[in-house]
Every structure is written in C-alpha cells, then in structure tokens.
Amino acid sequence: MHQRKTLDIDVGYLPERPKSVIPSPSPKKILNNELARPSSVLNNINSPSHNVRYNELNHVPLGRNPEYCGEYQILRRIGIGSFGKVYKVQDKKNNIFALKKIPLKQSMSRYDASCIITEIKIGGANKCKYLLSIKDIFLKNNDICLISEYARKGDLSHYIKARKNKNRPLEEGLIWSILLQMLIGIEYLHHYNIIHRDIKSLNIFLTSDYKVLMGDFGISKILRLGSIGTKTQIGTPLYSSPEIVKNQTYNSKVDVWAFGCVLWEMMSMTPAFNANNIHMLNQRILSGYCSSSIPIGRYSRELMDLAKHMIDINANSRPSIIDILQMEPVKKRIEGSDINLNNFDDYTIIRGLQTTIYPPMNVSGWDRVVIKLREILGMEKEDLFNRKESNYNYNAILSYAPPQPIVQSNEQNRPRIKLPSLNNNRPLNNYKDRYSHVKPRVQLDPFNRNVQRISSPPWARHFL
Image (cartoon, rainbow, N blue to C red):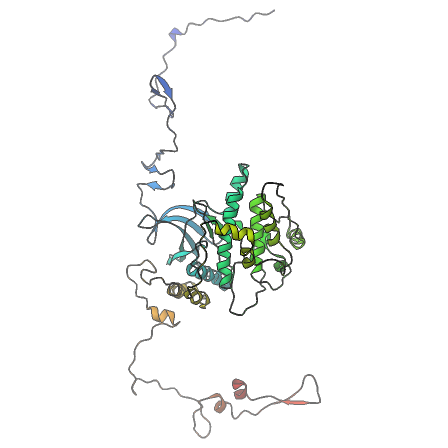
C-alpha cells in the first residue's frame, strides 16, 4: 500500500499576519467569563450614511423631520389599493387614526365620484359603534383625505389566513362575538334603508380588543323612502347572491347572503364559494353548494344551522336581519353580552343621508363638495384645506355660483339689450311672439299615409 508522504515545513520564517483595524461586524462580548451573543440589530439600527435611529414598532425614523398631512403626523403606510393609500397617523393629542388618501384625477368618472360621496355620507353620519366612522375630511394636494378609526388587527380576511397558517381554527366564542357585532351594524344600515352590497371579510376590521368595524361603503345604496329595491349588478363575485347573479331586482337580503358567506368562511377558514372561473362560480352560487367544508364536531349545531339559513338560494325564505335577531340562540347571547344595541332616536342622520350632493365635473369642484359634506355631517368649516389664509366665499360655493359683484341699479349702468321685432316694432319678449309668424306644417302620418297630421308650431312645443 502506498503511504502518503508528509512534508514538514518550518513556518517560523513566514511574515506575521497584520492585525485588522476594522472590527468584526458581530464582535463577541465577554460577560461573567462567558461568551455572550451581540444584541439584535432589529432593536437599534444605525444608518451608514446618517446617524439616525429607527423605531422598531412604528418604522419611522426618529430624529428626521416627521411627515404631516394637515394636522396629522404620518407614522407608516398600512395599505395600498386601486382607490389610493391608507396610513397610520396620530394627531396632536397622540390619538391614533387611519388616513385614507384618494387621489382626485381629471379623468375620474361621475360614478367614481358618487361612490366617494356615498362613502363619506354613510361613514360620517352613522352613530353605530360597529360601523367605521369618519372623523374628519379635508383636501390636500389634489387628494381627498378621510380620517377614520384605526383597527390594529387589520381586516378579518388576513386574520383568518394568519390563523390558518398556524393551524389554529377560530374559537366558537370569538365567532359568536364577531357575528353579534356584525348583526347590530347591519341592522343599523337596514333601518336607514342602506344596502351595503359589499360585505366581505376584507371590509370587516378588528381592533386590538376584537371590536368589529365594518367599512367600505363606496358602492352602498341609499334607498329612497318607499323604494322596493335596486337592480344594479355590483359587488364581489365570491359573495354575490343568486339575485345579483340572475340580474334580478334585489333588496337588503343580499347582505344576509354575504353575511352568511363570511360566517361560513370563519368556520371553514376558506371562502364559502370559490371556483376557477366566473361561470363555474355562478353555477355553484345558484345551486347553493359550498365549495369548502367544515369538520364535524368543531362547532355547535346552532352556529351551523344559522349559516345554512343565511345561505338560502330562495330570497323569500331567507331570513332578514330582524328575523335573525329574534332567533332564540342569538337573542340569548345578546342578552348575556356587553354589546351595545342601536339607538334610532337621532333623526338628524336621515337628513345627512338623504341630502343630494351632485358629483363635481372637475377637480376644482371638490371644494364645494367637501364644504357641503362637512356642513351636513356637523363638522366645522375652519381649516378645511389646511391653509393659513383662505379667501373662500362659502355661501357662494354652496349655492353653485361664484360671488357676484355688487352693482348699483340705476339707468346709466343698466345694460341695453336689443331684441328682434316684427313690423309693428314690438319687441319679442317670449317664444309665442317670436314664432307667431311661423305657419304649421302638414305632414303625413307614418303609420297611415291616408291621414294627414298637422305639426305644432315651435312656440307651442315649448309650452307642452
């Protein structure tokens, strides 16, 4: 067998390695004669270019000039979508709110503008503790800014996904708590003839103590008194009711269907109806066949039956919110909880909801809309646009007309208008005099050529 030869080398003549002047990125510290790990860099981060410390919780640089939007300091961004951006902000009293910035573009359609107005009217006028309320409205750099309550735990959809990733189903007590709070919130909307039309887990927000805040009233429908329903095909397809899929006239029971889908999603951890394409999804909705299942024995029979009653393809047999509140399991749990019931004694809400505000034609028209919204919602007029000097004439903006200069009425500065006249030199002051010399025309009836029809003169058409 071959034996490996070893070579002995005297390394005494090799030059000594110079010591580095650059310290190790993670030096070891000796505490009590033991090696200790360095502190985590997440707690204290030093920027290489700026000696700035960062707060781990708020992700906001401490020491730099804070960013403000009006009177609110922006802490961090918590959401972004097609509507705009949402930020976590605080006011001068260190109260935490959510700021929703919606950019106002020249290309914005009248429908999008009306959705923004509807969301502000419902969010600002409601007095329910389980509906997201808007505290302040103002304009800033061609953005309409909405200040609302802040939900620390985010929306229900992300909360369910986080629990699913940890393989931790929602407890039945938590589901009942969310269910009862949503019932009170939807009852408030339906009492004032409002159909939400977009109830889903993404629009249900949870605070730190699991208080429910229902939001996103952009596509909600405020029905007029005496109205039966509406027919607009709108909403999220996963939560659409069979009436919307069939393009039929529907009422507030479409919210009960969507509410049942949310309840099923909380129990199964997946959406109630799901498919690869919209055609298959509509077929499952029309058949009432849920694509997700709930393990047997995980939840009580009362909770399962309540979800099945809500997801009823027949709108006539589907219960309303009032019927659900009268059910014995729901009634018993409401009496034994600390849930605040609705108070319908405030009639000023009807005035705010039923006031018609026309969408503006351009970006500059939002000044009038914001002033009108703040007036009907009971907000003050000061510092609307966060400017130190404002020369707006509020009464002129609210009356749809610019301020007119005051002119003394006398014969010298009164304008003279020359009107066309006939042979008798009499001025034409109305349509009858203007077109009295026009003779009526004789035409054939398009349905019967043997009958002649005499058309009316132009002045007669005006008064018909």
